[in-house]
Amino acid sequence: MQDLSRRIFLEKLGLGAGTAVLASALPYPLLAATPEAPLPADRKLNVALCGLGNYASALADGLQASLYCRLAGVVTGHPEKAREWKQKYNLPDKNIYNYQNFDTIAANKDIDLVYVVLPNALHKEYTVRAARAGKHIICEKPMATSVQDCREMIAACQKAGVQLAIGYRLHYEPTHLEIKRLGQQKVFGQVRMIDAGLGYQTYDIKEITNPPHINTATEWRLNKALSGGGPLMDLGIYCIQAARYIMGQEPVSVTGQYGPVVNKARFKEVEESITWQMNFPGGAVANCTTSCGYNIDRLFASADEGYFELSPALSYGPFKGKTSKGVIDFPVINQQAKQLDEIGKLILQNQPLPSHITGAEGLKDVKIIEAIYQSAQTQKKVMV
Ligand code: NAD
Image 1: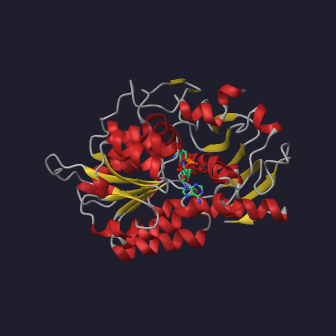
Image 2: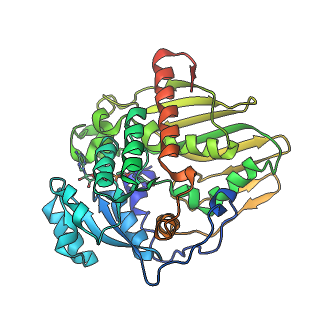
């Protein structure tokens, strides 16, 4: 089980070496909407990573492999991390910020975009501050810990005239573009039922006997004030996303059920597991599960004339799948580089980002998450 723990999983994420960026056009109609404008010669989008934890390292690798973006700066509360990143990525002192002087980034013409990779509850503050500083923003998923915060983030970006993307890396990943196509274009007829699960046993034997304090920085996912919730916020959002982009529709109602708490010391504030159902217009149902207590990573969709499925499905991959007619087999790509390139290219061309990766999309997921929690608490179906 240790192999599948979140830590090992994150280590496996060192995607940079040996993975190719897929440069060809992707078979997903939503991505083809904007006309190509010429890219400024030799111009790359200058990105500052805000929060230097695990996922920031994966993004830094993606930035190294990116064609249109470069790592230009960092925002960190730890002077030793600032020194380490400065040396590793050859960053000038003037592009290194802490959380106190962050707003002075407004005067720095060498930073175009701030990528917010902080604990969920801090997404709003740093997105709003980056917008006020006139910087474009990519904010990690989940967009925020409440619908209200999402609305404030969107409003701040609109007011400042900057673009806001959410870190939905799978929207650029070829296997997921294919399952969107299979679902939305009804390649196997109307999808009737989806089964989606993503979970990792995020503790090992040692930690169970000596549980970490839920308020330590490294355990922010267990601290409700910082995370907004448990695995539903962190992992379940991928199941919500997959069901929504397979259907190409929004759910009309949800029902949710909390799972048992096996590790009571660890899961004092947030759920350990949760299952939920999403009902779509026309009657299709998505049955989803997420957990920090057990491992699961699969996606299945049944349609009138066939099925398609992936396992691994919703993690970092490599994804494997099949349909009722054959295998699903796409090249492994550097997901972070691809996502950064697609977003960076449009911002450099001064083009609007496609709505399926903007704040409007992030808000839809957070709205569904709020409804699932409400249903699990009240044990009633909740209209979305
Ligand atoms: P992490 O714990 O590894 O890193 C969080 C960083 O935030 C740390 O550097 C920490 O020092 C900093 N921080 C600043 N203020 C903090 C505070 N008050 N408390 C705790 N930490 C504080 O977390 P992570 O795994 O890098 O996740 C960061 C964000 O990225 C989350 O929103 C998560 O959902 C998202 N994420 C996305 C993906 C993806 O595939 N898109 C993968 C992992 C994480």
